[in-house]
Image 1 (cartoon, rainbow, N blue to C red):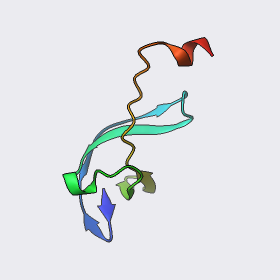
Image 2 (cartoon, rainbow, N blue to C red; image 1 turned 135 degrees about the vertical axis):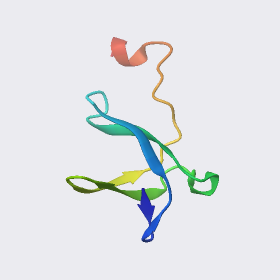
Image 3 (cartoon, rainbow, N blue to C red; image 1 turned 30 degrees about the vertical axis):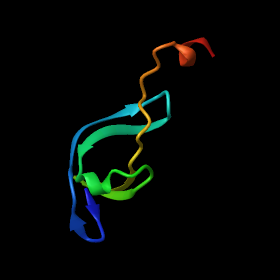
Length: 68
């Protein structure tokens, strides 16, 4: 993970999510980079991808997404 040309973290897992119609993942970042919507760049084997920090969990304990 890169911001301002500097390596700032590491992606630990990533998958496509049909629920949000986008890729989602987890990464290690410094606490100072953890503000919601912080923009980042991810270098991959097939090119660069834009990313951003999202602090809201994807967990849906009441199953609201399944019922709508």
